[in-house]
Length: 524
Image 1: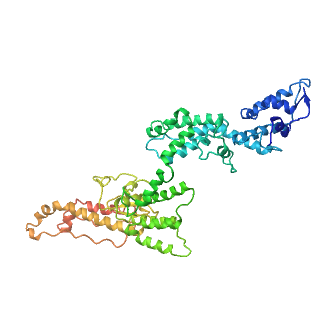
Image 2: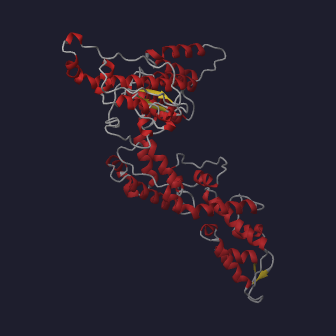
Image 3: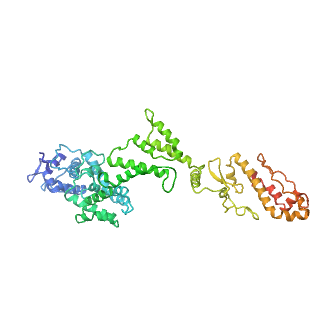
């Protein structure tokens, strides 16, 4: 069995082991003076202290035993220190591991990596601080944040504290690319350093579960030991369960037995929730077993059994046909996407559900609530009674149109639209607005005239049987008018014709409105 000494390893690092001073070689003197002939001293000996000690040797006289070392030898000593630390941190005995030469470059890189971890640990740990583990907090969501928090904190010997809560008791010697992972997987779970680290983890754990009576009760039996590893596994066994009785496994079993989709029935079930819960159940099994428990075909069969909605039967049949093809290209993820698209198509803007319509409009616009054209106004209308109440009225007969840039807006002939919005109207929508607005204004005029009809005409037509009917609505204009407004014929207020009386009663406003009807080449 190999038995290394500090002196021997210093000699391998390059320190002269032949020159004598007071019957001691340089390697022997440095082993005794710098490291007390003990490998454990390397855990607490900083590189700054080594440099200081070596400098003091250069200030001695030859009679006093002066030692001058080349820079390469000094690096070799530091490499020896890092190698020794690696051995102790990975539960290996430096005295029993054979070594012929130190890979100085690799060891110095490992030193720099660990030094950087220690320097940044305080800042990183403050950002990685987990939330309190309350009764409403899910264990599966919380414990990864706690483990990540422990990983940011170096323990007594510089090992990240997450090693205290690792699953395996024995060291895992599988090579790792990350030096910190290597330390955490191989660190000893005994000894003075582990006891110190386990106590620190206990302190953190009791802090984060404070106020959670259930969690506090589970670690009550271990309080005297102040062992964070015992505390952590007591909590894990409770919240995760053991074997087939694990809480998350039982929940996944219940999901696969009871979950089904028969349509958008909020708050009880809707597609997004259905898809999330089903996928989560499959993932739970895989996570617990460390393998794919349900194959792609098994997931597909389970999915199809749970789809009961009538409007999805065609999509379901299509997927079933694809599953019979050789080779089968249908996957669980593709099937979910097909069903999702069918649901979204059913409950889109054209759907029958009001809240779905509003949601779809919001998605098209990309922000906020759907707005009427009035929101695009740059200024309020002027004039006595102009558009009175139009800005607060909620119409039930409105509709929706899509502009040339894809924006969806509310539409009604009574709404005002700013110039920049009107320019984005499709040609057919411009024609529709012209026709609808003309018809809307005629209807309002007829409604306004009704209270005066008989009172005004009674004097001209004493015989009520000769009372002329109101003018019929004009047919809609087949085309948009020219950019310049047409000339309007003035109507005399003294005219006695039925049509003249109609215009006179309105006080000439209809004539004036005709001139204003196409301000800026567009309906007003």
